[in-house]
Figure (tube, rainbow, N blue to C red):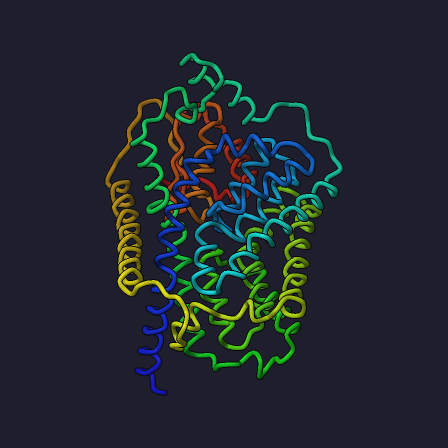
Length: 450
């Protein structure tokens, strides 16, 4: 096959995979927006504080449907911990959330079939709960009695007066006014098809490209012919997956193509679990913020869970349950499989592509606006600080929220593209800013000349 044939085959496979995924992705994004409205941050925080099995289970159940990728879940999980959640609850949330979500469940169904779509959240529940309970067992130190910042904010926000609202620094997070229905709809659609889509679009494209490349470059039955043993295949996939960054949704097309190339269903499941749930950044942050033993509980639960359930699928459950249905059928033209109408697939793919392009245009315009806008405030200190490790809007919101709540800080604004934080206020204590940034799991890069 010459280079032109490879390019044509790559484009064909890329489009076919995108067409299979896009209708379910659009539906998943919509549900993500609904969850954003149905489960506000204050509701989630309320159920994660106790060091017991119930809090761990609550954190796991809340994490499973949330559409957070493995970079977005880091600041969210650490924020829960800083707000008073137990280590067990934080770990269970960090394990269960990136493994699955409403969007990835629907995409899993579209490409891998119903059994995979059912077993993924079940495994996320079991491993999340086991990891949280193990972390609580390792954590022997009792929490201090001093109220957390979140507790102070919640107490302050319970006051009706505007003075108390301004004093606590929680600003617009206090819901003292009833939300309008159109405002909720705007929030839902903006989060679903702008904010969350911007977070996932880069990794979604990478996942699609990887899947199409593997489909074109790796021969059929490569793993069956060259590795042979299913368990060895699991170990190879596991070692490759642990440091890898890939979100739950973009891992699905890669797993589907790996199945077509001879990987066992159990090994594909190992990739679907370990790929999204772990990466080098997450491991480093957890070790720094939650400690070595908690990180060990986190990794042990994921690794053992992946291997146990991989072996269960390969050697206990009927393997035909986990054979390819969507992608394999579509690309190899098998008959008798239900497929969505072509117009819906193409319509969803075009809409999704336009939304992704719109996201990048908005990022460009926002960056341009910030570059052309000069801020001059008399008698106000203005610092531009490098913050390394931020990857998505969840990281951005976490830094702005926690740094902005510090005393003497009037505003905190993150430029996610440049990994910079602009803070303004009076009598700013930079050592306090550094401590707060590092406690969130990010790296303080020092002051940048304006």
